[in-house]
Length: 344
Image 1 (cartoon, rainbow, N blue to C red):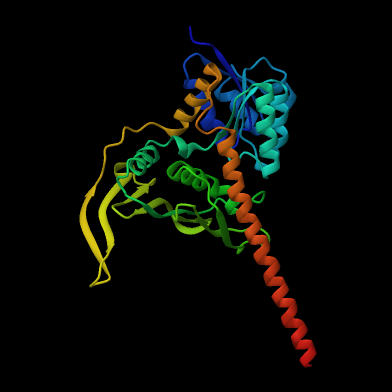
Image 2: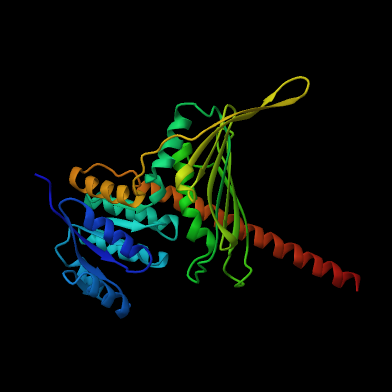
């Protein structure tokens, strides 16, 4: 007989209602309690789901008899809330990114192991059927050796004051790269600009390099006139584009490429475009199903704590690259100022 699972949810912002809908649709599962600091959010929960207990006290969730806790709060709160939930013996799903730094992520992984509890991260794109199909194409060698992956995640807004565009949008793309390439990068460099607020980057570019010789580029922006959610994979046999904004043609495979010859040095191939049929299921639903299965079976979910840690490492490396770039820029400005003074 399937084990009945009881869930508690902390945070009723953007992701909270979406997670609640999917958790409630799972077989033999129920959402028992929701916590949020905003009275208006709790009133909305109560109006829509009067059978669910609501509270502004996190301890009410942690001390409740729920089996698992889902955290959908700002990134800065993830570590403390997750640590407390694990300490109370709860299985845990944390929205992306797992934590704000590597040390915190490693501590949560160790704590989950000691407590023998599931730790999962909300990297929803790891559950996208289209990304799964693209990963299979790469694994089967259908695209050949991978030269590079280009990812764009652009839109006008939503501007956030608690984190920059890298920590807001790039976790999706870092997790997609981990899924597609099956490895972490050996080098990460970043360029970013703050146009609207002097200390918060709203446009950023990340360049990643891999042991295989493959490269990847991530472009994220809160300042783009149109919504773009696209992944382009360039292989030496074929190329593919995943377009999250085009449900009818979400994945296209191009029988195109460039071959090195003698004369001309590079020749180009132009062939047919294939659009495979993809049996679509909501990725967030698949994510919640994987969480429930992991709790019941004890098996690690696909988007486990270690996967979350690898994403945090990529984001941290990008952050460090920006810090070093800023320091170098400051040093050069100081040297130029000193030179001008000496010439005066």
